Image (cartoon, rainbow, N blue to C red):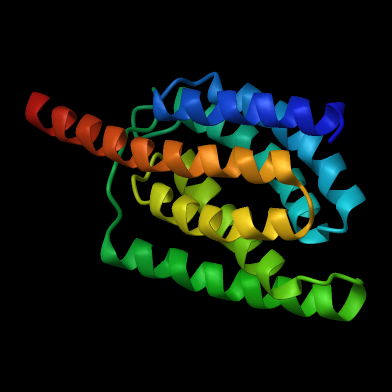
Length: 190
């Protein structure tokens, strides 16, 4: 455990806590956390997770824009549920991305956990996109990813990171509940 993992852990926890609160400052905290984990994962041989951090940095910047200026009236996106078609598209995206990453990891790297690295990366990419659009179902994908990440990080001796993802799992459950409540309150207000 070094200072990179500590900074990534603290800023990552702040990011998710701010996200549960629907606070836009989750994005700068997320960018800091992703930068730290990019370095940590590259050093640990979790190449897909390292590459994922680059995409997360871009998606955090895009999410910041969408939350501020997106939506039909350009004053930010609102919490929303997915249609069945959108959900199917997201699940297909997870499968396609995971298959592509798995192929790349087994062909071009020395990854010892290619399948697990690929599925967690795919789940995380699609969940981050969904989060940027404020789709409530993003929380379900994060929960699924965290349930895989925790034992994966323990296997790689990244104990602090495994602990962080355990906290993330709890926060995701809380986030799902809170975002559902906010969506219901928004519906009643209209």
